[in-house]
Length: 171
View 1 (tube, one colour):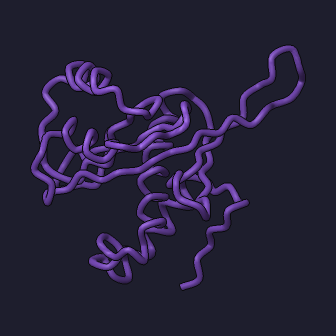
View 2: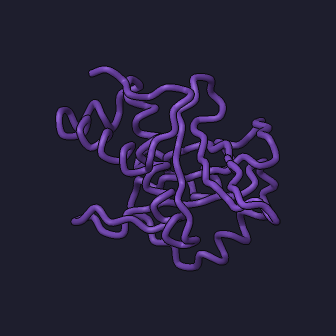
View 3: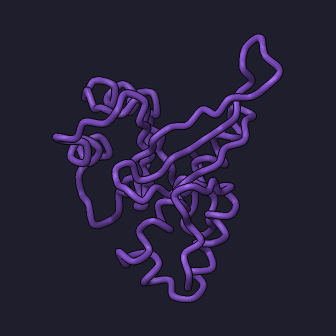
């Protein structure tokens, strides 16, 4: 399958989502684990997160798959320029990480391990795809723990499935 991604094209989250679903449909095990599909997985994760961010803030976002890593992904939205009759592009560099059943530490410990000895630009965001069954009792306590870790990401978003039976996600 020819990759549709180019470093100069912005994709809708929906496109990234549907493209990865096509790969999943053909070979689920390779799609979920193979290094060959790492960028597609990351685009799918960011696409899901951008759906949630768009819903929360009422903004439209696009994503881009850069050739060079880091960052894993770029996210972009258009914002009105103050005092002008035009929009400007605001984009963010995004790092993506997955926490799976194969990792046994807490969410905070896994994030600290991922970010150890990494120095990202000030506005780089981190999307954490929680791909294991864990109950987050108190999101505010988790946020407090994360803010005290001094990681270099400007913000951390956690994307998790809400049900083992259905593919519904919460951000």
